[in-house]
Amino acid sequence: MLADEALARSCAADLRDRFADYNARFRAVTQRARVRFETRDWASARADAVDRIRLYDQCVAETTEHLEHKLGPRATDRALWARVKAHYADLIGELLDQELNKTFFNTLGRRFFKIRGVDPTMEFVALDIEPTERITHPVARQIYLVSGGLARTFRRVLEDYPFDAPWAQREVCAQRIADDLLRRFLSWGPEPLRAVELLETVFYREQRAYLVGRVFGDERFKPLVIALRNDVDGIRADAVIAETDVLAQVFGFTRSYFHADLPTVGDAVVFLRTLLPRKPIDELYTVLGRAKQGKTERFRHFFRHLAANPHEKLVHADGERGMVMAVFTLPSYPVVFKVIRDRFAFPKTVVRDDVLAKYELVFRHDRVGRLVDAQEFRFLRFPRAQFAGVLLDELLESCRSSIIEDGADVVVTHCYIERRLRPLNLYVQEAPAVEARRAILDYGQAIKDLARSNIFPGDLLLKNFGVTRHGRAIFYDYDELCLVTECRFRALPEASSDDEEMHAGAWYHVDENDVFPEQFPRFLGMRPELRDALVSEHGEIFDPRWWMGVQERVRAGGYADLPPYPQRLRLGGG
Image 1 (cartoon, rainbow, N blue to C red):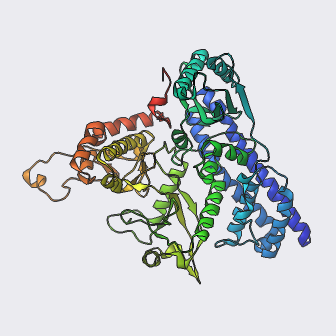
Image 2 (cartoon, rainbow, N blue to C red; image 1 turned 30 degrees about the horizontal axis):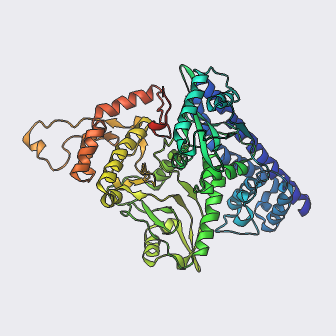
Image 3 (cartoon, one colour; image 1 turned 60 degrees about the horizontal axis):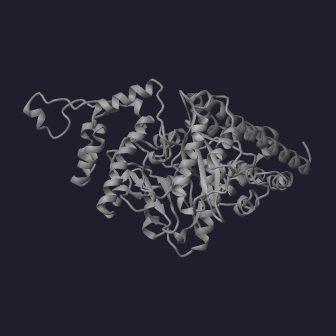
């Protein structure tokens, strides 16, 4: 066997090479996005999205097996692993995106040693991973000075992003982009824009490609994103996005991850922060497909905030207590922690493994802007004193399989972390009538959007939906979620006698996957004026024939086209 120092150096080199292999495989999948867009091969694009999500755990498993074979019983030798860490830090010191390398190392260490909380001798601590406090290699950009008119400038822009697919009236698209921007920036003057700056990398997701950058006037700038769509007539500009609020939704936590072949991820995050200064860094990493780094950033930022507020208590999140999850939050921080209960109250029939499977389905599914991205965490260590007494009592009583008391700390062995939303049932009670009605109508649209992406929420109660700061209704309670294609949508049978009609329960047979949409309004528990507005605008969702039609389209391979921006931003011909 090699001497300890040589063995540690060899393992460090293996880890560096294994991460480089993962990164190369990640980029190979990402690079296929252009061809998928050009050929309109949306089925393969979806398969690529799932494959890329699976890739990290696959590479970690391969590396774990390699190290176990190489080290044998010394695979859990803490002193040796500390030496490996030191050599690994030297090897990656000059690499780009070294924070990604460090997170890969930490993932392996936590799996080998079952680390609870943070162990700075065995892993890179959060403060070692600060990618966004420096710009080492600014991302490649194209800069266009506006001369000869804005339409001419955008003709040059579109010519500089060639595709192996025909354009549908490229000059018309350039003119529409120019006209739209001139109208929006009229307050900046008669010639409001001086320059256009765009990342060289094209961002792909679902059925669109995006050119991402900024427009400049005199001493000020605004975001600029041009959405491109490839349909039967060819590629064309579908929308122009220059509002920060809309851009936040495009890069939001309810959307699938972009496929963007970025030379350096950290520096791309730095650039995107200039467009979205309120967007958390962890969400930017995640939406760029680096979900594990997103988790690292979320962990780092939250626990730094927790340490800076030692007297603030973790408390129950607002809303009704869940039968499947115990949910808590830190009031000053916009996330919730969801811990699976040991036992589920009647009438819940799911078990713990079912809940895990539902969250895994959401993680891999197209979220179409209507499902929260839930990050799975293990062995989070909290100061015991920071829990409100009533919350800690409940966790210790009903979540013992996920909670460990360890001296002055509490270790949460398994939980999900999500962005905190205002529960819809509370929102409609608190909001002015106009905003409550708008939220209910968007709730109906959310159900339609989910259905068209092959998701049936299962439980449509308002408490299972939340409202974002942009006023969008989002589904976040996944324990009864399933695929639309797994359901059997039925009309309510007609009673054959008075006895049947007056029966207190269901007098007809109901299978496990049977769904009766006509019954939905009975259980939603909303005010009559809100229910009437919902039925008027979205009455189809209470008709089994509508759901069966959705099933037919999904089974035939029909993919929902649900752009992440409002209809008003779509250009002429959209």
